[in-house]
Image (cartoon, rainbow, N blue to C red; front, side):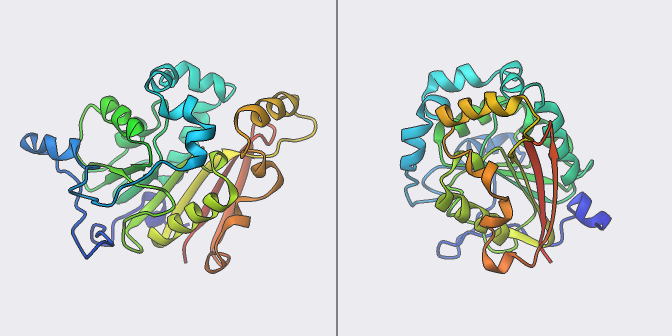
Amino acid sequence: MSSQSDQCAATQPRPQSLDNGAGLEPATARVADTAQFEASSAADEFPTHVPLPAYLQQTYWWAYLHPAAVRFFERQWLVNLILWGNFARLRDLALDEIGQSIAGDVLQVACVYGNFTERLIERLAPTGRLDVVDVAQVQLENLKGKLKDPSRIGVYHQDSTDLRFADASYDCVVLFFLLHEQPEDVRAQTVAQALRVVKPGGKVVFVDYHGPSWLNPFRYIMTAILKTLEPFAMDLWRQDITDWLPDRGRAFKVEKETFFGGLYQKVVVTRP
């Protein structure tokens, strides 16, 4: 990979809204503009209502939608425990793929419990910028509460299956433990949207569950946990992420690594 790709160097203008050509410029770092940052997901930016998906309300209300759940899960030690002590390693694998010093535009699809976003922000070079989208408003509010400095950060209320950004808007797109939470049809749309908004030469970085080795003792523990709490995750044990690439994405360069006895994977898709 070229150093430009590794560092996500910016080469294109900021993304524009797909709705009537309206501008989609995130909030700036000016103190007087803090309210604009706080309202970056409000109706004046995106007049179309963003409904909560049925699968999210039915399957994950206990983890992502109820305010008490957000308060409970937003603990660094807890998210690390959920990933069997692998959170920091998997986080850094994803961030290293984006770059040690990120000079371009990065899109994070879905908020993440723990310090993933904060550590990504620490790597932003002076010309770098991060946008984060999530379909759950409560998750966006939680993220805003974690950010010490809103400079160069855009927060948007959007569905991952219908991103309101122009084609080839971002140097890198990252999805950290999102796909396993989505049904297959939704997952395919999410992957297609991520590939659509990344620039030629840019990367889409996926970190998620993977089918572990038969010799991995966590295989049997995780089978019970995932089937009970995360029913869509077992798809990732049976299929490759590339199975959800759109037809036009099948010519993309794909690199895959697995970790912790195969229980986790990092897949990097580079757009030609």
